[in-house]
Image 1: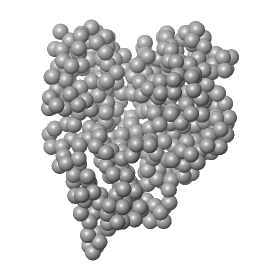
Image 2: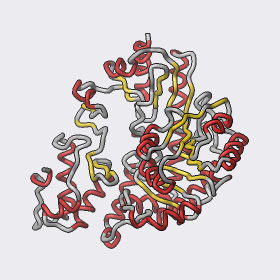
Image 3: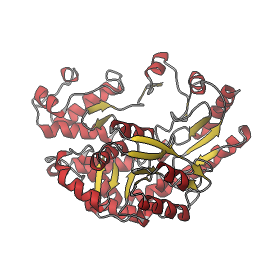
Image 4: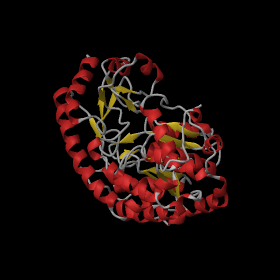
Length: 444
């Protein structure tokens, strides 16, 4: 048990939360605590160490903020995935870990480029909140901190034209958590239309609620309205930033056609606007929610644009669902750190996020163009998903992912033996071409 080796000394001038934080951090860094390992609940550690709840929560919030642990709804705190210890990468797959395969070329997209991380600035905002003890002595609001919801309402309107009252915004630790809440509001046994291989985590939630999943088809303008009408779903989950056929954004004319079809069939639209802010080749057009706020649930996230360890997503409900949620929200505990919520609210209001995004767009644009130049030399065709920062390459090679792992290359988990998805967000630029050469060899 972790509490057996947490040593605190109440006589020291070092705050107790800092002593707890230091011990757990060191245990993770030296490998004593492994990825996905559960750590004690706040209540359990309070009891074992005979300290206040605020002390433990402050330590855990700081560990969450710095990406050492993550808080899963209804499950508790776990050591974060993908942490490096020395030169060894903790992989997501247990079999890979047992093989002790060193991943040199990481195209998995499980992180961001270190040159686009604003950790130093972010840490200042987190520490500022941690120093305000009066803010830490209460639980977070069930729906999310009002300060953050108001900041998001302004932010989402300025970036995507989203029409939102802060009272309709729900904060959660990741889009998957929010979709689970939404399914509870909508009810069981629904039919969902979704593009294949678009959002596997959402599909899992739908299956948990006994939803029937049907896959839509796309043409050169995006989701096909005829395929949508054929399915006649209760819910459509869609991202109009990327067309699987050509990588282009869905034009406004098609968006309006989709809205009309959904209105006629009484179909709720879930618009997952993943990474819309990271468009760098084109400017993002107005989202579906702006045209049809009464029939659309809008979902956004800060994980990729800020840093993956900051698990803050938001869901904007139409009025009818917001009213339904308001009646039951006291039954849902907030899954996101209060410290991070307040830090993010001030980060947005101080225009730091806007400044950070301008830098990230410039950097990822250059990185995208370089990756494209390399791919042209080795592959005849590919598609760029701009906002998700990956290239999709058609191939026909059996067991391609296993072959690449043996060569120290990791690709996106949604890749198949028919197409590869190479995410360039995390890999160092100087490693891109050598990594692609290894992929070419594996495809021969």
